[in-house]
Length: 89
Length: 119
Image (cartoon, rainbow over all chains, first blue to last red; front, side, top):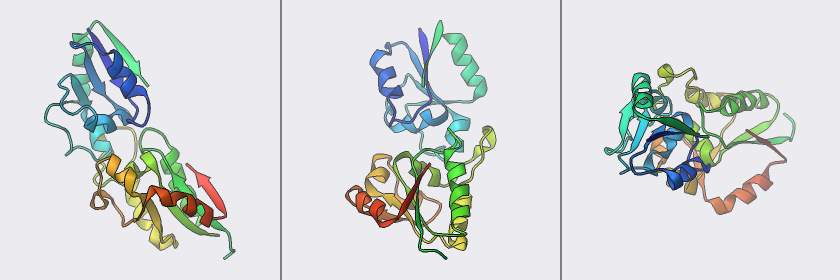
């Protein structure tokens, strides 16, 4: 089980590259400019979003219901749930 | 005032890099000696989203500084309708009034200014 972190907006290849190889039981965390991808992954319950980065970009009230918001402690928690981490940047 | 006309093009999201903030500083400086306009292009439109709350990150919310552009004589900020639509944004989501143009009109806008500065 892998945690995939994405830190680029959907205009970059990071998100599509990640989705192309992500397993059904993997997790994704949108961080930094990756939080702009939230509409592209709405409905995918594997996806988590880092709240401070969401707030910094003015998107705090746009989180789709199927996605899970996490704070920095939640980020650490996700890391402990998985075998390894893959960064898409 | 010279007849130099500067078009500043902001094409990156805020917070992920310093380009947007540095670009805004350059716009304010440029306005001291030239006629300036701004095009928020592509991901650059993200810089104008209201209610950015950066207390949880190491970055700064500089979107409010766009409100000072009018005081510096920068009257026109352009954005592209397709860029808004693709990002599920409307003009009411933005911190300042903008002049919305179609993507097909960007080429002629670039031609209207004798210098283009990209951030």
